[in-house]
Length: 509
Image 1 (tube, rainbow, N blue to C red):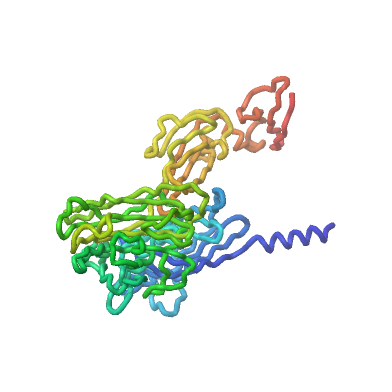
Image 2 (image 1 turned 120 degrees about the vertical axis):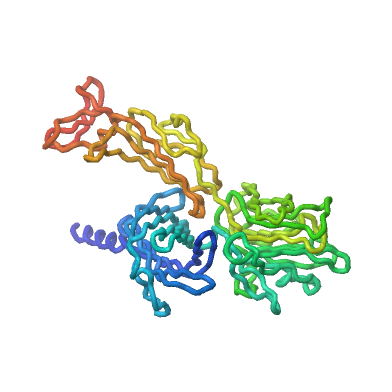
């Protein structure tokens, strides 16, 4: 028997620690401007806790790169929300120098300890993390690091561009007629260029219309691929499409689609729109976003598609008077059990094919998929938290009962919002229970960028049972099964009794 137990112990011990390396894209956000780089994140699970290491973190910009160092967060407690393992941490840590031989200087050697906040999740094979590194004391800014693909748009600030054909360029992750397919691709002209008029950073995308032998060709940009199949503007062989089974890549080596594994609530973008000549019958620019399972889909549709997860449209973008304006469109979900795999976003100078005028233009910058992260209702033990509103984050109530995380009921405003529920006994400065439970609910946007935390202080004399004192300094105590302390036993009832030697027993009277 001893040999069996020894073997079991050895197997359990060998499985207690496991490490996974995630080779993932990293998006760095500084002052609202994004840049992309590759990185390796190592996550080690050891006895139910997690360690996360981001090695050789480098800040990159047009003026060059600057080595920051290694970001290490240890002993992170996991929380389970459905199939997602959530990792939350808020610590002040010391960054350590990296070991990349191409970097001659690491800021970590000269930095004081810095506050770091982590919001992350592991869901199947997908990792998504958001790390805030507070460097206000040294660089006067907070560096945000978004880790993992499939939740957000790449090249959100349109700072990175690649050559598509000849000397023409397209923003990374986006395509226009420069890389189009179709019989008339060579006649479609050029409809996109890099602009220095930016909402943030140094660049935006300028989409513009042209006129070819009197026919207006709308300026269009898409995350998929353009197809120019007809000289008739309204012909649906003129479209934007995606198909993740196709292996072609663009001038940057990227496929003609954007992976998406989650369910955003809306799409938002900053635009400047003006028409070369006012056309009252066709005055609007447009944005369209369609989430699919990754099989072939085109916009505009040429048939009824069953592979659609959700759609978002804003066909009423008006001229903005030379001002940057944020516009958005909510996703409407089909609820047809299709799993998201890709998103097709298309932006055009006019909502109607071949309409508008020559020299219409839309400047586009800072596009994002928005994931909501607020509660819409909150109950504890079936009772509404009085005065609840999504914007208010702190409450008090009284319930003289034992409370666990399972007793917290809530609803959220997001299609894929993640939730963490915890219940703790509140202690005073002398480490004595105050008679309150602290019920905390954290709502996280699915891409981990947004977070809302709600705290309810619940007055309850049942908290005493969660902190039974030692017999050496305190007398015996009697509790009912719901956690209330009483003075005497009553016949026909069951009690929890802390005995004089410090042990706890269940007693029937």
